[in-house]
Length: 189
Length: 200
Image: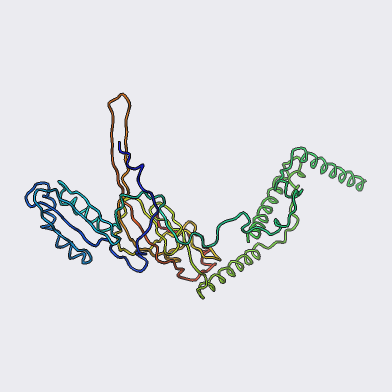
């Protein structure tokens, strides 16, 4: 089992040089393709160079592409970034499609991403605009002038009517009505 | 405003209650029981309350419009719904989308599902999202990369079973460029809007 993640650096999302605020600047500056002219492990790389490399270079005028043949060595991709980072990638026995994908990844990323574990998916310079919440937000200033212990503040906000109280109330009402009935009876008499 | 709404609700409730009491009086044994919280004032005009409420809403909207018209609102923020997650963003922020997402670097997009937009003095809250075109949030894709390598290791003891997998999923970094309120608010229009027909 690999324990490499235990020693992995962790960090927060950052973009180099305020990238994207005005316009987007491609961070990949140089791309080096190293390969062998006759070894089988470089077949995909040779195919890529024959078929797609010129188109890639035309589409991305900002990226300098170096092609370096060397005898009997594995094919390698090296990307160099605007922040000075250098990413080395072995492409042994990779097919042409795989190499296209890896080059695309090198092109779209800002540096070596595998070396950082992100702790947040969000970065801001202005964490709060309406101010942080406090318990006194949108509250009446009366609470400031309250002196403790206070009878009023210690009671619950809503005390439900108990069954006894309800019965008492009913009884009183009935008594009242009874009195009224008596009165009406007397009046009728 | 809330107390106004409450009073309207109370009036409605009490009227219904009265109706029921009159209907059930013949059957009930103790009508006094039902009548115990009989409403005293019956002269409250619901339409007047509604009109007052409307006026108050309009006043608030006018204040906000005035502020936006003079561009005194300061920095805006918004809560956007993006790829199943909600982000609170303000211009200049960076957010990350995890997993496969087609836009590539350099693309300028506008985030349409704005759930909430606000400034120092006001907040516009959507139900659940704000009207389309009310607020625009513009963003640029600045990076598409892969996560750090995650190791998935499984082992069962004494069963000759062991698996190890390595996984890196795509990540997209987005820069928020601007948040703008496009058209002036209108309280009556807000009241009239039907629920949007878009499916999310």
